[in-house]
Length: 406
Image (cartoon, rainbow, N blue to C red):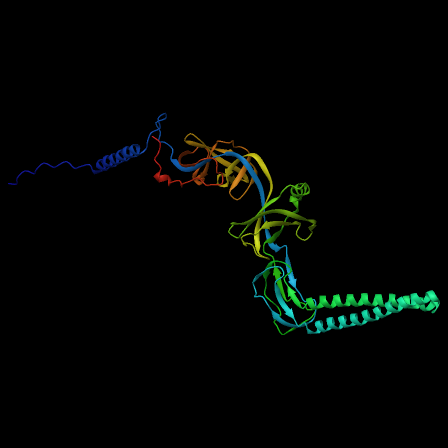
């Protein structure tokens, strides 16, 4: 006999198992997501992300309107040392680059021929003075003899003419002596001003002539310096009225790194506009007590055209541009609003705002790349008013490091 079969075991429904598992995982994920987002107090929805920014207050201050141009340093007293007599250059009595005083001997030319000319002129003077003395003695005798009719009136007049002739000759001889002295003095070259000696072009032993193309050397006074620069002609109406009225037009001379080298004011304006460049040339006299400027040096010149009184001033970093329009982000509580602004003037570090911002407004100066109108912000640094050229101290932290508002 065969034994009876065991009853069959029910089969597990596997599709139902996977559905329950997936639903449980989704429930866990939703719970974690809700736990990690802080609900808004009013709506119960997750709060918007917060952006870390730096701000600075707009202030009211005088704002100088400046223009910058490339200039060339020129000495107001630059001398080309040239000979005024010809001859052999015996010596150069100064070193290249030496600082000399007015009257110092700087070179000597062979004086022998000029000394001989002076001696000759003096000899001729002595000869003619002797003849004049003889003629005057004879005239004195003639004047006595004429009283006794011992000589004729014609002889007396002839002698008088001879005395006048010798008197003129002696005067001419004296002038020749003085000219010979001057020519002899020219053989010793002295410094006409205080200054620095340049590189010499002629060595001792060479013959120097009046028509030489190059000077013996140059002599430059480094204390009296000026800067020549050009500005677009549109600034003429800003410059000429103040220049004609004698009002100071202040300039600052800067090096390539925009570090100040010297200060001064405009002392000359050209009488015509350069038609090739459309620019107006100006000259400014500057102080050079520390010898920071050198002739023919290229510098940057910053000229103050005028000053805006009581302007609203912001750092340049606060100004943003979109569609060729300027705007700023104004902080109001924990959010920012986008405000269009109109600029009155600007410089490398600051701007003067004509419309859109008032003194005392908190304006974002750093962290603007992640902002939009109405965005939530957290101010991590704030520059105090009073120094609009300074940047806000500190840097905003990364948004991930900023704690969201509760």
